[in-house]
Image (tube, rainbow, N blue to C red):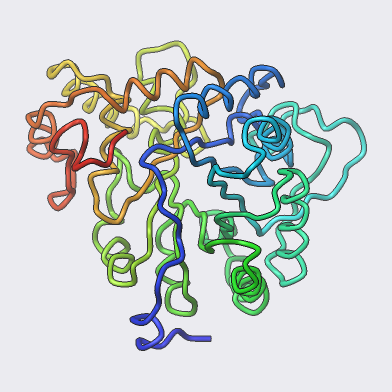
Length: 353
């Protein structure tokens, strides 16, 4: 299934035009802590009212809870399905005994299902069908293969990757060719598996979580050039690296990085970022949110938002005026990759809402 250079060069992306700011819906799937139904619904309502037109979710987020909550509120807010929606495949949800209220896989008080990896043709079709039912949508705009790679699967990566190429990818292509989904891609936490996949298959879009942020920019060396050469659009998830770049190091909340407690080296790195942001009077979270959008391959950034207050805060952070001197100071201090594009203004060439 190797993608020839001719097929890659002739490939035209089917990714719809995405807005600079999207809504990451993991938080309303009870990531880290329970969120009440009414609070989750209010968060989505506030996002739509604020003009956010793109929402990303997955079956894994609360084991169907995020998708079900979105389906309930969007039935009223978006009956014409004008909003853009992405969800993911690669896991199927298997019922478990009990109410599932204990914390599992980072989600608190989640639905009574266990997520089981399945990248087969039938597994992807089942996941897509069940997601569409929970979301109440006739069509999914973006369908993404979730969590391929060694960071998630370790030694089992080869097995899951082969299963995806032999089955799940074909299912995604079939769904796109039939018009059931608008575009297909990957939703992952590591760019290396994207480069591996691009050697075998064609994609419209990649959602890269946590790997192009103020804390790390190694994606600039090979991944972004590969995407630009193929016309692949990049969505940045996890711009706060699971929270530490929005909360900083000085608050009382736990310091999360990559969905786990932040190691000392990361905490020290964030302290250096905080010090420079303080010098220029810029909230760390504003710099973290706006930074990825300066790259020409990046079309959208999708921070998680758990309630209406976080929606308002995110809108405000997107519009903070960041002086060019901050980016220069970060680069001079070795905190930015030498080739990292930086926003020239709050509008970042018209890309920041």
